Image (cartoon, rainbow, N blue to C red; front, side, top):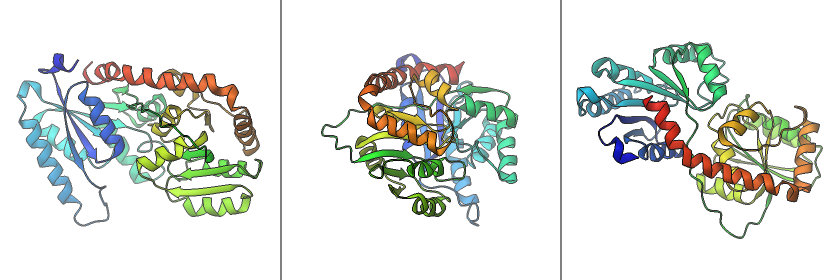
Length: 339
């Protein structure tokens, strides 16, 4: 496919150096000629030196755009709607290149601060195209005023499972610990589970202290907070778990869900609002609790742990769905970027 695009549009990926960014970069390389202008850390808005990295990014982006013929100006993709839009829009003004924003979830969903909402409205309305990780993100972006939106799910590369799984963890969840998350519901559900059930929460955020206190209040079970972990340790935790509970509705990329499915874990979707997305977009078969309360979630968890053998068919089909999704992603990306 790439040979057919040797003379086609080039893509410049703009954003922070991260695992998800690296995955997107590698996936785009299968579709087109792509250059990643990455920065190592986030921007500190309270820093007086903020303009300096933005100017550096502007000049790097400008030089790359001008190196291409005028008739073949590259498409600039800003991964995650943030301050990178400023150099991208500035370069568009000079070169006429097309700017696409890639809304991945937590950057546009659950925004409460007025200034941030104003910025998102301005950025999405001024982008040529807003790429959205799923339909829920697309609906939110349309509310912000974006006129051209396309769904481009997160790329994912299936991995081979190691042998010798220990199943040291009964329940694992991965996601930012924010007020938008449902980790508190999982902790409340622990009070209705067998005391031997071990729950591990991976992620960091402003709700860490509150959730820790809540776990002590309900904590006849073993609830452990591991904070932010490098990808290798997240994989180790998933690989040695029995069940994955999705608690972060605003993690639109859902990469942890895909990793859990790849590791052969049954998936419980706490909210159930992304059940159609997971089913239609990725082909997954999540378990959705009957009601959105702690008792119903506890029942779903206990039933999955006690009847794991009955879930093996869905677990196997989830793995197959991830592999199929990975193979089809380049064609989906082609349509989203170049149609």
